[in-house]
Image 1: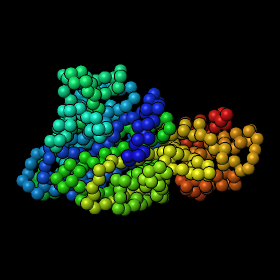
Image 2: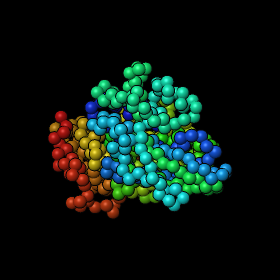
Image 3: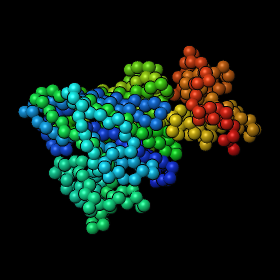
Image 4: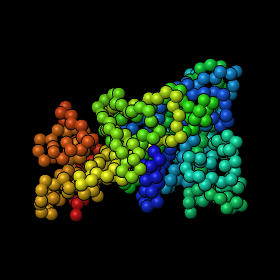
Length: 404
């Protein structure tokens, strides 16, 4: 999402030692222009409380010409601030189980380091010229370009005094029969997070526009939440024309407007469920980001109301985000410093319960959590010793020590 992504980049500028950026997903995309079109795509992104997102893409390609071989490639943005240096073999340090099956046959793939196109306009001259000729996934010539880990984690060309971003590519040869061809593409990648955000899942939609029809005739996006509850935001710009809808499990959606730029946002909460968007003759100039609910702090002006409470149970970072937030605005009336501190500690301590839909018997807690849009009561859920992760158990036991 253009607006939210700028905030995410800002996090890195302000908290360079705290934010971690791992990888962006991308469509399968052609190296050269072809007359092959994308007839159908079903993109499924599955989120859990674990550190990895699982991506599954099912394509139908139409080849109206003679059978042909096309080199295809999957591009993955290089990690940022994760401690991993450049892998010259082109193997991304945070992608697992990369697999492509075409027309029922598993394809072998090779790896390489390429110039990244998705971020920024200050491309080096040779990359601009290549893009102008319709070429993509341009391999890096390491005789001229060197990895500058100390200064920028980018590539530097001493001869031309130019910098460039790089990405990892997975190449494979695809044989297209005449007529309909199917491709199933799967992989897992480590989710990015920041000091102020539990998770950030980018996905590049625009590379699919490089095929012959410059669109996806029939496009479906599914975001699944497995064995947990997730609260997230998607900018509507790439998804104009129809709305997201919950198709499985428990969940809800609503449309908000960003205060400054009037950009429409879809807010989603899912518990063991699926949200779906569908469009025909789908074309876009924008890519997608799935951002945990905390971004609404920066995007929406809540006026005189207390800022919404945000919580995520991710194993990576989410549970700790609640520790430095001020929930005193929910205190009913005036109180002493100790009364307010104890009240805030109770909110923090009960967030993992509310996240799972616990129905509170205490009237004050019930009122606080029922005022949160993401709260979905589940009378059937009863906490057990195995209900919470290790860091959630720590949060429950130590909430009172984190408020001054």
